[in-house]
Length: 405
Ligand code: TRP
Ligand code: SF4
Image (cartoon, rainbow, N blue to C red; front, side, top):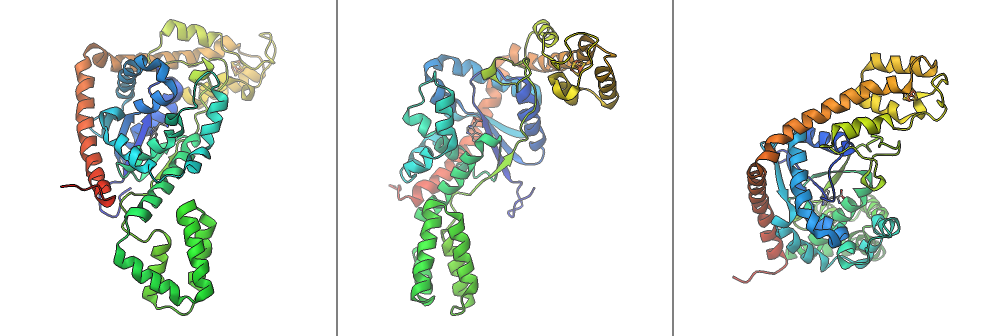
């Protein structure tokens, strides 16, 4: 997609380095990135500070996980010739923007983000009662806004973070992007609405700009559409004024929803590090083969002679990812008639997964052997990212009045 300025839109996404990437990440997230890198100006980064918000007590693992993660990206096909790859903490401007945004972000906005309470309940063994963890979504907002990204590929759980980012951007533009002449004219136009409508307009505008209340925005827009007293110019002005009415310094991003990965783990549940059921991208082939052979199948197939139902079997989901229509037919027929055993059924999947892992390992090899290659790719990416980030910060600092020379 091309933006109005004729440049491809910018896409930004990040991953936390909290452990080795697995096949769920590969099929769910990385393949999507690889597609996007040819369509957009993509920035992909390792969110090492975000990893620290939850894993500060294992901070020594973050750097090795980070380098391994970048190698996995490269092996998967993320191409530094097409996307900018960098590490969050090597672009300290993110932290500066985070601090500045924190000055006017209401505490209640952060407390009501669903992941805040969810994660605290889920990860009871971790200390998440920190300032850093509360600020997690705001730091993510800084990551996004500093690159003026239009699209943010994320999973469903992260959509509220992008939503918060939009509200923070809007509030920033409202507070720091107004030009004084415009405001005066807009206020005069509001008065022309008449006493009661003017009062209502101001109330609805406030509810939208300060609380992000979308129904208030719609009501105010309807109010403007219905009114008869104003000139066309004043009406336009008041529509603009409703949404902040100033220069847009920080651009509101949109979430680009990544299809939830249905990739099953080795125990049949969704593949996830917290379930300890993963196949990592550089896993040992023997272990993988053994674990898939031990994977649960349709519980109705106790014996080889019991028929089964692929819909009730996680191996069938692996077939969806790895095998073609003719194999699918063979599974359907063989499973429901007990014509094939589960061991037979798993074999084509095992073969495909092993060859996929072999390919990934082969593509990772040069980077494993020569770590300077990876370091150079990241150094280049960081330099490019820093330039863009510094550009935004320059404008942000100036519009906030932090200008000394
Ligand atoms: N919070 C994201 C996750 O856990 C990682 C992340 C950090 C991110 N900053 C980001 C994703 C900015 C997209 C954009 O997956
Ligand atoms: Fe699952 Fe295949 Fe066994 Fe059927 S035959 S239960 S699909 S592994």
